[in-house]
Length: 266
Image (cartoon, rainbow, N blue to C red; front, top):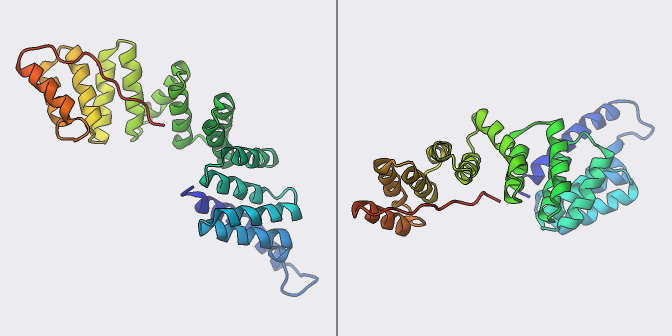
């Protein structure tokens, strides 16, 4: 994954601090410390390979490190990252589950385990992993992943409070407001839907967002405002044809389209 190297470097730094302390003490063999041990030397090579995006080599070296030290949590994490980068979801879930067992307080491991389970369609287990990550470190990225997964799985009642929490905190993720807009539209709350679409459009100029805002404004009887939204939608290739049709309907005095909803991001 594109942040795998950074995550490994972060974990490596934590262990390096401990290693530095060890290295500062008198050693039985001059110039030797824990990094010279086979398990850690192999891990360092694996981390270098991961950074170079040589995922197969990184995984192979990390597995050798695990063979030398069966509870090598960083090596298991690296195996998981290499598997995620190659879309090897089952292997990733196994490696990251081992990390979570060895180091339950790792928010990153729990979050990435959730991602692997999600890709496998194991929604309940993914949700548990994401929730475990949030209990350790309540960051927006993990909350967004959980909310979108639940929404896409049709579990709106579970997704809604997560989306609303991020909106109330002033998130700058337009997808959050798009999710709230869709839910509000489905429930017939067109005013709330329009408000959410407006926030999404303010954050990202998107043709589909403007088009759907226009549709909701039509439902509210706000024809001039709907026309404005359709005109902004028409500036975008992906929404131009539909938007122009709705503009023509308004111009001709016909009733525009009643509904068109965007999907939540996956």
